[in-house]
Each structure stands twice: as C-alpha cells, then as structure tokens.
Length: 491
Image (cartoon, rainbow, N blue to C red; front, side, top):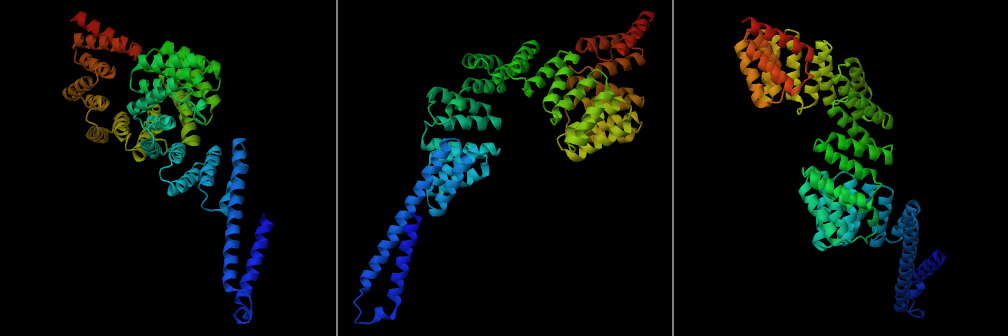
C-alpha cells in the first residue's frame, strides 16, 4: 500500500511538472489543463482513501493487541495510526485505554482530552478520564467527570461506582453511600471490567456505613460481602475495622487474624490487630504485631511509630527512642508528629533540653501541631525551672486552643511548682471541666490537697483517678493515698 502511495505521488509530480512546463502554455499542445487538475484532484482523493484505510488497519491491529493484554505493542500501532491520521478519534480513545493498562495516567488524561475536544458528550471518555484523575489522586476532578457522564446518561453504573469511590476518598461518605446504593439498584454488572470493579459492592456499602458510624449496619454489609466472597481478606479487615471502631477489640482481633490467615502479607490487618491488643493493654501481643508490620513493610514509618509509643506505654523509653530515631533519621525526617512524640519520650527520660529542641522543631514544621507542641515545650521548660518561658508557651498554646485541658493542667503544675496553689487549683478544676475522663488532673489536685492537709479531698481524687486508670502511676498513687488516709485518721 505504501508503494502505491509513492507511485501516485510520483504521477502527481509528473502532472504538476507538465502543467507548469512551457509546453502546456503552447496553444498547439493538446494537453487540457482542465483534465490535468481533475487528475490531480482524484489522485489526492485516492491517496487520502489509502491513508485512511492504513490508519484504520493500524487501529484494528492495536485493538487486537489491547484485547490480548499487550498494551505496549498496542500503543505502537495507535501511535502509527495517529501519525497517519491525527484526527482519528477512536485511536485516541483506545490509546488512552492502553495508557491506563500501563498505569500512565497523565498520558491517559491527555488522550481523553483529545477525544472530548472532538466529542464533548462522549460519556466513555469522561469515565475514562475520571478514572485517570482518581489514580492521580485528583478526586474532586474525578467526581466532576463522573457527574458529567451521568448527566448524559443517568444509568451508567460504572460512573456511579467510580464516583462513589472518589467521594469516599474526599470524606463525602453519605454521597458515596448513595452512589453505591444506586449501583446495587441498577445491578448492571455487564460492563467491561465490572467483575473486578463491582465484586465487593457490599464491602463498599459497609465502609461508608462504618465511616458514618453506623457500625451494626456496616457489619451486616460485610457479612453480605462474605457470603459472596468468603475468602476475601479485605472484607474481614473491613468488618474488623467496624468492630474496632465500636470498641469490640476481641472480635476485631478475630477478624484481623482471619484476614492475615487468608493473606499473610495484609499489613493493615497486622497494624490494627496490634492497635486492638494495645487498647486491651496486651502490650506483648501488640509489640509482636508491630514487629510483623515492620517485617512486612520495613519502610512504613507507622510500624516504627506505633511500636515506639507501645514501648513508651510500658516505660521502655530507650527502645521507643530508637524507633523514633529510625523514622526521623531514615524515613521521614520532617514528620512533625514524630518529633512531638519523641519529645514526650525525652521528657520521660529526663532529657529536657533535647525535648525542648524536638517540640521547637514541631512548631517550625506544623501549624496543626503548634498548640500541642507549645504546651509540651512549656512542661519541659517547667521541669528545667524556666517558669517564665514555660508560662509564655502555655499562654500562647491557650490562645491557639482555649479548650485544651492539657494546657490548663500544665499551667496548674507551673503555678504549683511556684507555690501559687490557688491559681493551680483553678487550672486543675478547669482541666477536669473540659475532660472529666483525664486522670492526670485528679492526681495533681490530689497531691495539692495532700500538701494542704485536706486529706479527705485528696483520698477522693486518688479514688477517682484509680477508677479512670488503675495503672496510672499506681505505686505513687497508693503511697500518697496511704499517707492521706493516715493523716485523715490522725486528724
């Protein structure tokens, strides 16, 4: 075919040459100019038809390759088709699909844009572009594309499904739930790729209900999903997460364990099983789970961080410090949350100056954590007996967050250290008003009552503290409670 095109081009050259030669301008010459131009016109038309046919053939070959899961080879064909005919819309469309198969999402968006420039009402192109945007984490843009597609055809199950996924990613859970319910209502699983996309519709419904805190409904949805896919680790993980959110730790552990049985590399299940064990104060089991998380994904900072604060729970501060150092030195050197957590550990280890440095680093890195970092830096400075600086920090913290019970408690401690007991009482009381479940203020107020020989009030505070957290400074609380009882009896 290519040789035919070359031959025709040669003929046209000859015709043009003849038409421009002096002979054609000679009246005695028999060549008709009209017939020459007609020949040129039909020759060009013939070339055009050959070219279009060539692009069509390349396109069809690309389609076969794409159908046979050979996207790289398909791309080559589509590229050649578009070199031959740059206006070939279908070639752009299917080249975009090949890009999607190769996870080249930005290239996919560009080709879908080309299709939509020529046909703005192409719903398939809108859905395809939406999927590319989703993979590029441009979720709001994906939502818009799916919405446009649904305006063109309100029965496009794929558009509802993928819009539901996108809405979930931007925490619009109620709208996401509505879309998945619409998918369920349409029950059209005949679309290309739908067997993978819609297999776990009950799981998506359950996840939306879980995020809306409808835990019982969520669990019912996950049970429906398990009827359909009884060996799906992700469904067990999701049901476990609904149980975790409703504080059914033991039941959650069973589901996470089942997920790990089905998929031993299910990192999320290992992590949340560890968190469940930690909530139950089963620290040994929690540490084993976090060890597993790190083994499965050594570059995941969360594994080290959660293991670190579990070590801190059992006062193994050196081990905790080692994990935090790992995260900050090797994995995420600018993670504000890890600096503040390492600062807590350094305070417990008596390394107050280093703790101040970590809290200061947090303040520089994050506006979100600034109120908490200021408050904790204030406590570290109090322990260094830098009371004026400590008061300045805690005051700034309270300007940023006037409802921070910890800030009132820490300011109370600063006042107590300076023997300003009336001010300390006011702040401890305010901390309790803001958070009646926080044990620390009861401990510190109880100590003040003990100092002022108000033994009965001290005993009441220690009792309340033990109701809230029996493990909180247990030896010190028992010692102080015993002294208060002795004083009370002596009085």
